[in-house]
Length: 76
Image (cartoon, rainbow, N blue to C red; front, side, top):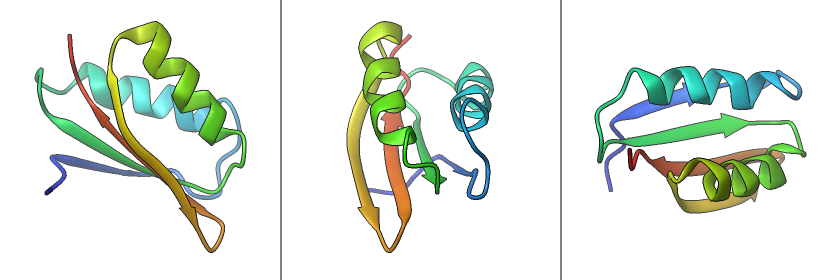
């Protein structure tokens, strides 16, 4: 799957990764995907909660060598 938008927020701590992701999603069209790269360990739970509350689809979340990789689809 090719990402429509890539957001690299490595090095930033909560709440900045989530705030920057929200801003990016606001500029996107419904159905587009946003890949977020983060190093903040709280981002895993943050994006799970955000997707549940916002209605955007969390397609995947994983971590590899300290980098969290989240993939969201804009749903509304």
